[in-house]
Length: 144
Image (cartoon, rainbow, N blue to C red):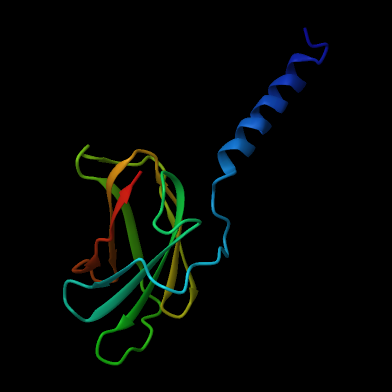
């Protein structure tokens, strides 16, 4: 039996659990592969979107980071300053996640989606739209 006070034991247990959960979590600034996982066209056809994932490509179950590079389809110019909205969705189960991913524009036209929690194996859609809600892409991932 441990002689540690209950409070210290509880704090140590919580710290251990948090470090175990964070172990697979990608950190901001992850290195993404040079080759994209997916190349998509927005529904309007005005933008092209390259999709990369970290720490693994293709991604596996757990916490994932995703990088979207959005360029003008006609000029190849980066599309910066977009108000990107993201919802991870599992269509077969009819639900998303309780964790809201964050979106950061790391450079003009390059958006990093952090804290995508893809907790179940199966098909996940990353419902993504920006500025005008009619502009969107839906990267679809098969998670194992």
